[in-house]
Length: 444
Image 1 (cartoon, one colour):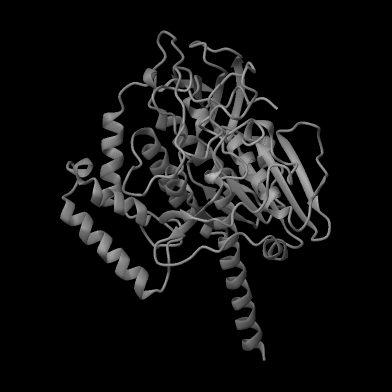
Image 2 (image 1 turned 90 degrees about the vertical axis):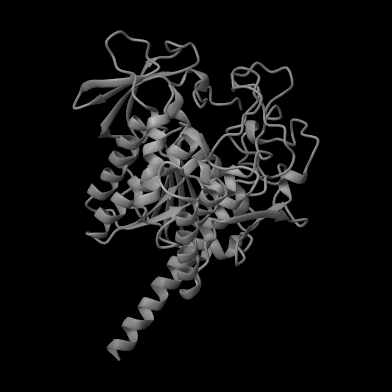
């Protein structure tokens, strides 16, 4: 299957300078505590980077203040005996992978890197090692027991679907689902694990809000041009999720595309639209409002009682050029955490997600809804070796993006996103079980 031609970031050299916006974001990071359920405040890896790259923060605070804040957080974590599973390093795992491209039928062609001749295999032989604890390798039987009688939906773009396909492959060692989709469209799939009465689904919503195709080519001739209604729900998914026990929501790469932005049915600006008298807004403007509206949709659903996981932004890894200017990702091993850092638009997207997540969580808590942060950003940032690159298609095949540094090979690093997900489900399951025992003891 060919790559989704619409799932491509716009050439970033067209992006206006966003120094002011980034500076403001850095100041926010320095002075405002962010909600981070598994930690209490800051993501630990972000604090590490702030200490290692203190020059980036010279306008907001001194390196010593970041060292102090990081030390305070570490002491808090140690006193509460909690471990940040999202902060760590990739370590060799000679036992991997736990499925292959021939044992799992859920792998799309453009993720089937070995089929199309990738010569190295080490990209499949790493596991994530959190600082201070271990993250268990995915246990498919355990996962299926936890979700027995429940339902899970992935909402977002083709990277969200990439994670769902990884999950199907990881579960394939125990069971395969049957297709119970209500429409033939590949963008809206529903699977049933009958033995476990578990439903798995994905809903295509690359912007998370209402969008209409305005031009299949776009003003910059790099792809789809959309009208984006930032304050309107995308009913393609908001009208279908009330019965789900878990939803995993994510978005990112589509916001690099050209678009006209609407609020209250009025044009408020655009991205790369090249229209007279229409303001070209910062990329974070639409991104922030889209997440705000998506979270508002979830919190407004009267019958929704499930847990919402925000899967954080997954950076691409184009080097030596942009996606449409010869850029590629040819590295064959992960970065160490001190070899790279989150910066530019990647940093801005990530911080925007955290800030909107905090607002949504506070609002959701008022009616008993749970929000959890599935923070895949650091682990993903460190894996430039995990993309299909040129090995997602035949050598001479005519594809929109010849070198794919956005999606992920299967098997590959994205499988660890589901290691994270299972660990978080185990925490929820243990919490529910302990609360049930507590209630039972009080009634005796």
